[in-house]
Image (tube, rainbow, N blue to C red; front, side):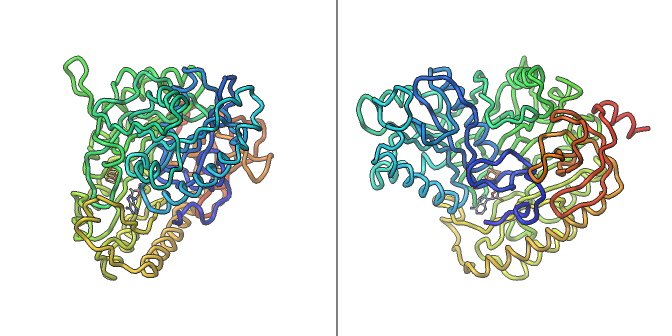
Amino acid sequence: MTLISDIEILDDPGKTPGRGQTAASWAGEDIDKARTTTVEAEGHRRVYIETYGCQMNVSDSEIVASVLRQNGFGLTRNEEEADVVLLNTCAIRENAEQKVRRRLRDFQGRKRTGRNASSNGNGSGSSPIRLGVLGCMAERLRTKLLEQERLVDLVVGPDAYRDLPRLLRETDETGQAAVNVHLSREETYADIAPVRYDTNGVSAFVSIMRGCDNMCSFCVVPFTRGRERSRPVSSILSECARLVEAGYKEVTVLGQNVNSYRFQQDGVTVDFAELLQRISFVSPELRIRYSTSHPKDCSDDLLHLHRERPNVCNYIHLPVQHGNTEVLERMRRTYCRDEYLRLIERARMLAPDISLSTDIIAGFCGETEAQHRDTLSLMEQVRYDYAYTFMYSERPDTYAARKYEDDIPEEVKKRRLSEIIALQQRISLERNQEEVGREHVVLVERESKRSTLQLCGRTDTNKMVVFDRKTYEPGEYVRVRITGCTSATLLADPLGRTTLFEFAESAAA
Ligand code: 5AD
Ligand code: SF4
């Protein structure tokens, strides 16, 4: 898989990369690369967690870390010294699964030679290393992983993380694999304070709902993550308030389809726009992003918020998936090309200057050359700032796998994907060139990887900016003027420290 932002990059625009991670994660869903824990904690047995897939999985790993910490385990970033190795997995495309299987074999080899258990030196050498698969691959592959391949000691689905300590005890006691892949209709982990690891101390993920009821025909998520359920408003607001107290400046609110958030509290139904508004009042200096939205539920109330609240970022990730109405119907996306285009028009009318990104799938079942060209023409029409692009990968049990033939040859899928990528690169570059000369407020995230003399951070439109360090620090808002760009990064001159409030006032004046 190739992601647009892999191609030309000055700086990693998202998280600090872990093992093998490239700079692909600035905003949208998918990464397909591993990230690892970076917190060293005192504890009897040490756990190493490697995370694959979307931001939701990163957030889940923080919950897993919290559950295990509360139960006396330590966390390590060093796989060599781990007593328990957990891979938090992704099943969205076949290549994501293959990566995890290769990694499991690697760890299994070590397990056999006892390399980890003998080298950890933490006095806990009595238990052999335990290897676990968490997350989206758990339910689908449990029989294979446990019986045919005998690869793992633990298989734990996304709704069973509270059970991890018990499952670990069980496998220790019996020497047999322990499994819990039960999908819940209620679990939101609302009461669990996530352990923020791999953190820059500036931005954090806050999960607000789990599961998905949409049943897009290509997607395995409803099967691996279960039914949609929303987390209580009060627990989301208190988590955001705690983050502000701890010095965080940005939250990304997460769910498979955040727009369908709905929670009944005191006889009132809080929808996503209302929730976002309440979060925006937690602190005027806390910037808010969200991911991912489904175009079918993108309300005017939500679009208005982008303009009305200075701390709700001027950016939406709105996956279109395809540019042809007939393909969209087969994908079961519930909107047609024209409806999607009207939504984009409306978004730009209600929130001028909003930046947009999307997800696009090339080579879906039965896609003709003319239908592929409809995707290209839609991209030309919308002119997204970024796009995450994928080759269709058939997923077992999905509607598409049952009803349609995966009939587009691999070379054709690849060629169509590369046409989509080349077009998006050109558009991204043009969009970035339009930024030269403009002023933005950037939240500094960290030092640039190219030079210790430079810092980087994102605009509120989610564009990565690199500029001279001077006396600025991560966590500060800095006013900048854009001086140059590539298709992935803006270069800027810093003009001075600011606040979100001050910048919004000066922009309005
Ligand atoms: N094949 C290719 N891409 C997929 N996605 C989801 N399922 C598949 C699949 N079977 C993409 C969609 C989605 C993103 C997270 O991953 O574009 O929005
Ligand atoms: Fe998958 Fe569609 Fe749900 Fe997104 S909205 S997680 S693509 S089923």
